[in-house]
Image (spheres, rainbow, N blue to C red):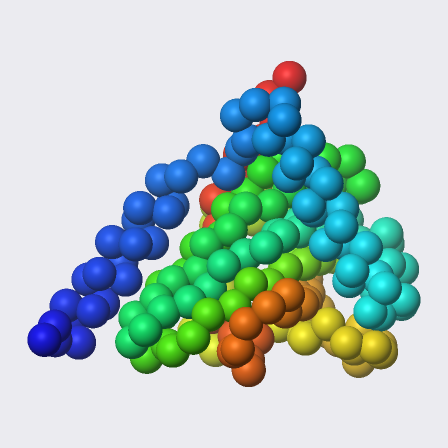
Length: 182
């Protein structure tokens, strides 16, 4: 049986493997599908909490991740891809990774990160962005945005699509960013 250190090494290996995967779709069909998935996720957030759209449109930027997978048995991880918007315009793609220990179960969820300021979005785009171990998101539900607050100019919402995990812990999440090159 693997020791705790062994489990952590496996988790780290999974994170490094997924971190090496590109966030940017490689074909036009993949780009179109990612855009469709992201727009559907965003509409789901808005349908659940109608006030959330006002926050997103007034923010400097946002990143939306659709169908992020999270799961494990003792050790596990999170991985997904999304799109990054600045002032409502698509500017790049991003991936999300996270290694976990002591996890049991699996789920698929969407995550919406809202950047209040240019500086917060620039930190994200520069790769200088990760959540500390105790960070959590607001679970997307009716009226949740009314009491949500920016933390260091970033607000995060999650919406469970399927699965059986009861928390919205985002501590330890790391992100990559790939700008759209024209």
